[in-house]
Amino acid sequence: MPANLSNADLSYSIMTNTNLVGAFYNSETIFPNGTDLSKAIYLDSGANLSNIFFTKINLSRVNLSNTNLSNSILKYIDLSYANLSNANLTNANLEGAILDGANLEGAIFCTTIMPNGSVRNN
Image 1 (cartoon, rainbow, N blue to C red):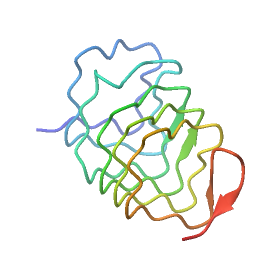
Image 2 (tube, rainbow, N blue to C red):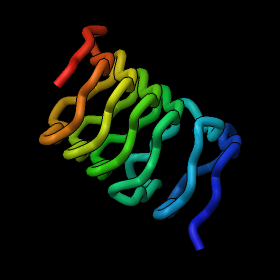
Image 3 (cartoon, rainbow, N blue to C red):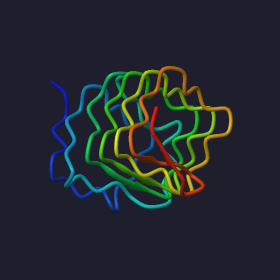
């Protein structure tokens, strides 16, 4: 059975080799700042991560294809080489995020704040 992380405070958690495939999250889920989740966290493509607050976390090379990231705060996240194909980034805030080499094919941008502070609508 998938983990229910709704309202969880993971601020002081050690996330090494954590498998969160199918886990439930909500806007009250707190992920630790500065944590490298690029190899430790396994996310379902197609996960619902809307209204999530991520900041200063390494999500490089993570598969977030078909993921709902609408209304999420993704400030200063390392998303380099992440797969964001067909992800919903409507109203997401990517200010300061690193998107080098990220796959953005088919991603939905609607009033999305981009890393440079501009707003993208397409």
